[in-house]
Length: 136
Image 1 (cartoon, rainbow, N blue to C red):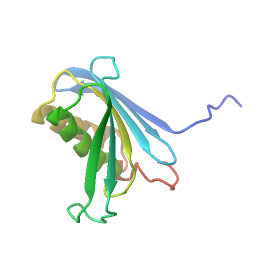
Image 2: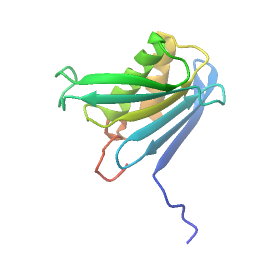
Image 3: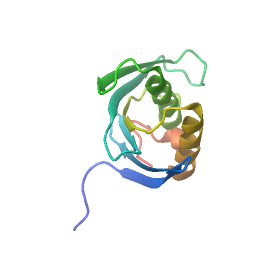
Image 4: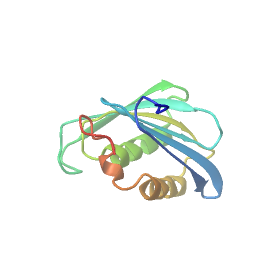
């Protein structure tokens, strides 16, 4: 009694290149959601999906991004979305709903954010989108 029902949630608060950053990861049965904010706002909401069922990166997995709310046509946001999908969902066909609001969208921020997620969403970030499997 007193346990909260619902999907598993992981969270992390830390600095990315000196900027306080909050991360929330929610694993649903048919998709995952990642919230990354440095502003305390939801920012841009993107749907990232893959088709092709490739078992190894580079084996023809096609990734699409769709902006649902927020800034449209921002190449930097699409790059972040694709890289975070690859990290969180690996080579699965699982979609990712990404809410992102950063102060800067640079390669250095992306590299540091990926490293922070790898360290703090362990043990296996690439298996977090284990749709149909028991959430980690």
